[in-house]
Image (cartoon, rainbow over all chains, first blue to last red):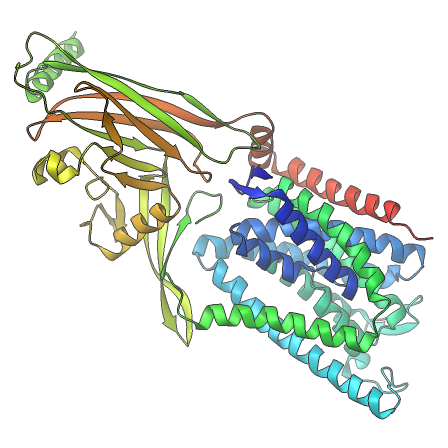
Length: 310
Length: 258
């Protein structure tokens, strides 16, 4: 079933995109992440230009994180104060990210930047996650108790000024690192077309010591708002958001996510982290290989006036 | 008054440049308006026409050759070349191709080298190798030789996407004076106005030419979306965001477990 995409300017197979959305949605539901880091590369792979992919995936992530955030809200697993402080940085970061995206696109180096950021971020985070999951699994085998939150162990972050009490998370923390984290995630998300929760969640847990009860819901709120803003800004500045593509992705994505979330409850969290780490690492390696191996064609054509490229 | 005289002089000189107008080309395309709808996956147009002779036509002349050049809306494109830097392949050099046809197809009834000598080919821009593709070279604007690596890569990449093509047997003469040619339009076709130029040759010289045109337009839903995205970015973005929230909300209702 072919459908012509009005912004990407090419016909695609609806069932293929729907299946891709569902598969990525399943993964995102399984691990509690947005799945943008998988969706954007997949779209590029089927021939949609990187610029259109990044811009359209933002709205897809907004949809899936909204459905996630709603269910976390019902379970009171969102810390509104923490979310608000994160957002104050996140909004600025997103705006900066969209601006940098536009500049890079004009310079002709957008694809390289997207590829390089994927390599660095994904192999780094994926590798760390895989290693951590492996260690947790070994510890589990040996029967030693796993301690995530050592009471009283403070790092330098807790010495910063402007402290604030986040009631629902039961933490007392300076707003400076929280705003900085929001800024970083917003920026990365807008440039790379990812929600960034796979980076945000580890930072919140290990660096800021946010309890696991509120971390998933709160990070989802940040993802939701930054992606809604990214959608708006991409639509206003680059005119590259393909609403038809986004809708197909959303339908596939939110459906897949529900099944993924159900499957996720049946798997041990150590296994989940190990698997997610492997998956992220694999995508990162794929991008690395593409940069290092000599491409089949050294030449590429870009459109100067707008639209995609070939 | 002055202008009128100038026009007359111009017409006379032009008339003198083209050798005795003895034949006339009558052409038409099967569809002057190709519409891109949600189920558009490419299309084929048919160009047909005939060579009309009159009493001035040398009676012995029978071997006509045709070159049909279809060019799509003009656009600015950049060709990038990757090189290995610091162990990875990155775009290092680029050339801008200015106001080049986004779609270019050259069809003829026999190889172009057999139709006209090299100087005529260059003058009439016959074939992709001779069509002017203006590049920005430093501060200058010029076309380069057809073997230039950037130019040939540009043409090759456009050919890979079906956007540039050259077929030397695509024009068929049904009778010695009646001909037809098919114009394939790929799925990733550029939207806009297309010019079709038909040139008639005999004995290696241009006898006459004719022009026709067609347009490719988005209509209905496609046009609405593309228009909204381009001209009303803010509202379009807001609608997309609302759509995202609605579908997220709908999913949380449909799959609600409590």
